[in-house]
Amino acid sequence: MGTEQSTRNGAAALQDLIAYIGDLSDTTCSDLHDHGAEGDSRDYLGMSEMVSASLRANLAHADPLHAEGYLRALTSLLCIVADGCAPGRDWEPLRETEASFAAPAAAAALLARAVQGRMAMAGEQGGQRHG
Image (cartoon, rainbow, N blue to C red; front, side, top):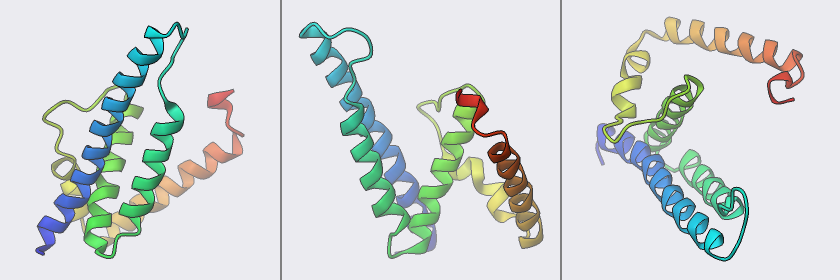
């Protein structure tokens, strides 16, 4: 399998997971509401099991390019959500992450250090964002 195809397959795996979660969310939300459930009645347990299985399978995939594609798509999704948005129907996570992954290794290492510093600062705050 070609390099580009392996990476595309990894990204597609995350997009498939999002579609499956959407289907399960829609189904369980309406099913449980039909039976008198109040509040958010989606099957979060079932969805979390799907997410866990997908993460395990795709990040530990035998082809590292598949894992890269999955991780790039997941990272793109998290950035979109962190910005307060949602991916559109035409979301292309590999295109969105292409410039960063094409950058010289030195630039990528610099970015990684910046992210690690940011995460360390967030850890020192003791989870105040969720409190």
